[in-house]
Image (tube, rainbow, N blue to C red; front, side, top):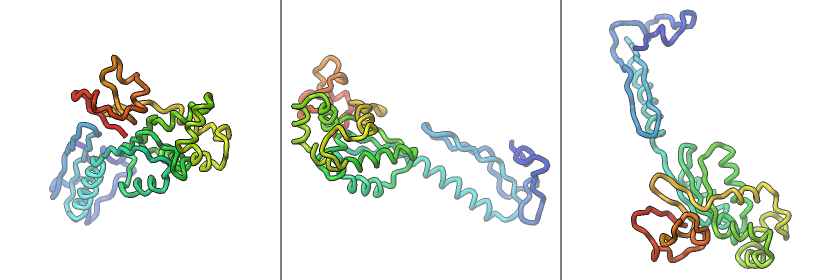
Length: 239
């Protein structure tokens, strides 16, 4: 049991008064180590409270602790794909779901190109990460085309035809070499898939006919008719 001497040192111990007495043996309300258990979250422990008067204080405390516990249990996983430079719509979506730091947000690639504000989309992701939100992004075929453009002129031409021009405009430049390293490094760091519990999340699809499907980058980024090579024993979420 946790008594008042455990909660307060002698010099900080509250004085008895007409409203609250933490040492009385005649308790109106008592909560003793009530464990609220959830498999994915810490156990909440309520210390023994011995209150003789003013039950309203106890009730208010009860409501607050229960409310905080319930809110903490409401953890959601949100998956968004193919934002394609639409930062305004992206921010509206985040506002509508009231994303919390305890939630998980997974972006299934194609953050950039076509839309008017690819830079803004990446800045929004950076802002979320900097403020402690749980955000995971994976590679899409448009991020791949963007990165390939640095080393291959034909890949660059293909990227420009598929929304690259709009991405450059969002960075206020006409050449890919002037895009800040921060954005390039971030896109290079993206993985081709994410595992969440029993689910595999990818941008395009998975070719189950391959010996090692998760190493088949082309399928993960480009496969469209993946249902033809789908294994029902796998749980897949695609963009």
